[in-house]
Structure formats: structure tokens, C-alpha cells
Length: 99
Image (cartoon, rainbow, N blue to C red; front, side, top):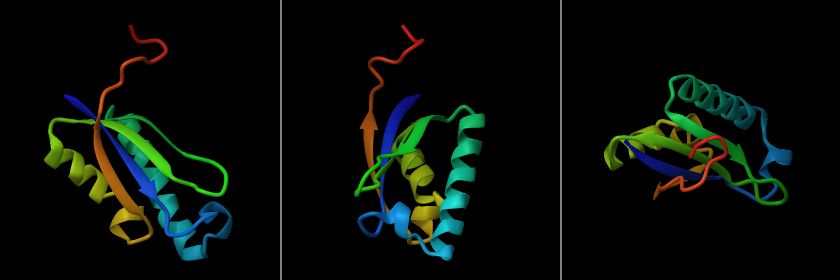
């Protein structure tokens, strides 16, 4: 199983402080999906950067690039056009609690 990271680029600076109701709903669905991926053992970690630029990151496992792209593309924030995704292969080299 390979590790992947996708960056979630919101449509404007200071996005977290300026979301519309429609955007809040989409990001709520995004968060619920990440919770399901975590419960299913797919997601390693996820969260946003803070400050003026609120880029999100999600590190997860997938068997290959096609599956990883599908996971990213099905993110409700990306699929709904509320953010752009950027996928890269990733390797967790050091992780607390893991040798």
C-alpha cells in the first residue's frame, strides 16, 4: 500500500473566515468523508493550515495512483468545485508511535 498526500487549495485567501453557507455545507460533507476514511483505516491524518492561506492536507493510503486520484476527486469540496486538489505520492518517514 502506498502513501499519498493531497493539498486542498480553497478558492480565495482567508477562506475559513469568509465561507458562504453553501461552502460551509460542502466543507461539512468534506469533513464527514474524512472521518469515514479515518474510521476505515485509509486516512493517516488531515487538517488545514491556519492564517491567511487555509490550504488543507490529507495523507492517506491507496494501492496505486488511480485509486489515490479517485479518493481525492471524490472529496466533496473538490468534486463540488469549492476547492482544487493537488495529489503527490508521499512517504511517512517518521511518525510518533511508529518505528
